[in-house]
Structures are given as structure tokens and as C-alpha cells.
Image (cartoon, rainbow, N blue to C red):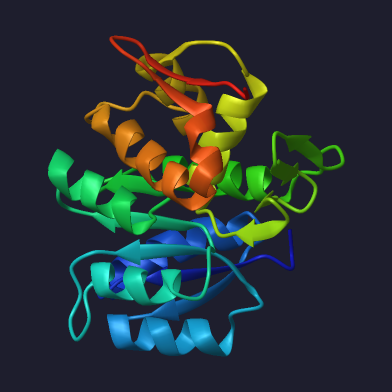
Length: 225
């Protein structure tokens, strides 16, 4: 774990120190930024080393949403948003932009560390060789997805949702079951979060997006025909 770098972006120095101390104790290397502009500067200088970003929403110079948008233009690095807001609409907006995880302040540093470790585990674990599903080629070892030979960019959460649907091919999955298995914890927000992700995945899959069927009153099913 010594080679894993995490970028902590928060305008509160005390908050950065608390999170940093807990992560360092777990063996992570830490980079810091006190505002949005500095965050983009640090990320661009260390793009190949940063494996996860903890990003506050409310910051001076450039807020978290703006930072998120710019990073997503060039990278799918996992991003956990830290926010004092608890509105469902804010969470849906974040997921639309490509957030992988949401943690509301105040939070337990130990829980935050557990979330960080879980995400990094899922992004680095070794899987089997690539498999083709009706023109959708999934390489779990490299965590990549190609559609008709063309690589597509998916956020961590989009990738995990697609994989879960594929691994349960021909099975009707309820939204609650998807939340419990893909989000990996009790999610109390609006289940429209799933609909938002499915919409984006379908768009990225192009004509193959039709494989994700909407099951009225239930949820979704992946079916290749």
C-alpha cells in the first residue's frame, strides 16, 4: 500500500490533518490542497500517482463541483465527495458528474478510511481475463470496457454497476438489491441515483445500451439478444 497516493482537498486545515493522520497510519501517502485551484494544480502534477481523491464541496476560489468537472475531463480516478450538505438532489448532481462515493460531514474518520480502502481494493484487485458480452468486452484485470473494440470511459461506480448487471445476466434486479450490492452500504438517498447511472451507461454503450432492460416496477436486467 506504500505506493498509493491520496489527494485530500479541503479548505479546513484541521479537517485535512485529522483525515491525513488516519490515512497515514494505514500506510497511505498523502497530497494536500486547500482550495479548488490548488487541487487541480496538485492533481495535474501527480496524475500518475494519485489513486483516489477526497474532495470537499464548499471551497474558496473553485468549488468541488468545478474541480470534479475538470478532473473528469481527463481522468476516471475514484473521487469521494466530502460535504456538509445532506440534500438528495446534491447527491444526485454529484453522481451525474461522476462521483464514486459521498460522505456527509460530520463523519467518523475510521469509516472514511474503511470506504477509501474498500474503493481501492475494488480498483486494484486482480480478476479473470476479459470476456465478451454481445460486443461489450470486459477486462476485469485491467478494469476496462470496450464496445465493439472501442474503449469507453466509465467512472468507478458506473463500471461496478455495469459489471453487477452483467454478472447477473438475465436476472431481474430490484433497485434495492442493486444499491445494497453495488454501493456496498445502506444508502438512504433516492433510488433515482441508479436510474441516473443507468442512463449514462446506456449512452456510453451506444447501440449496446439496449442490453440493459428496464423492468417496470422492479429495476433492471442485463440481457443480450
